[in-house]
Figure 1 (tube, rainbow, N blue to C red):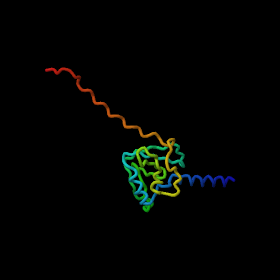
Figure 2: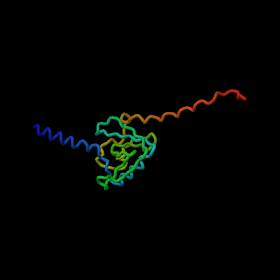
Figure 3: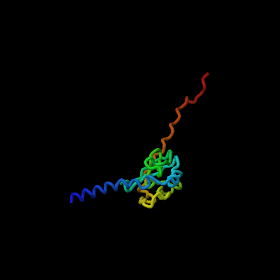
Figure 4: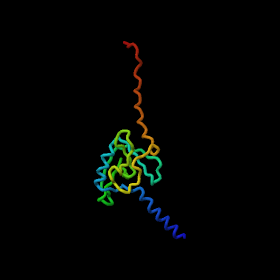
Length: 148
């Protein structure tokens, strides 16, 4: 019995990391389709229900790139702000104020992508805080009659 329990736990622990790698390594074509949907200045949402996420994490896009994976160059990965992302857990808006749509589904990364196609409002994190307003200019000299 003990051997069976240990075996089952070992199999579960080996399977769990796979949940987070559905669309990390993609064909070059899939990666190239994804990058234009990650525009600098846009906010995307990262949400992995299989990893235990209950609320998405907003990320402001500065850069988006695709490159061959060093371990296996026949695959490409997409990076946002220099960090590789899993397209199956990345959500974008294709229209202003439109729904948050699964990027992996939009670019057909995998038929095994079990993430929701769109996020519901309870899953969407608060938007990134608005930038702080620019400081008010320092007051100039008080207005009044000019002295000679």
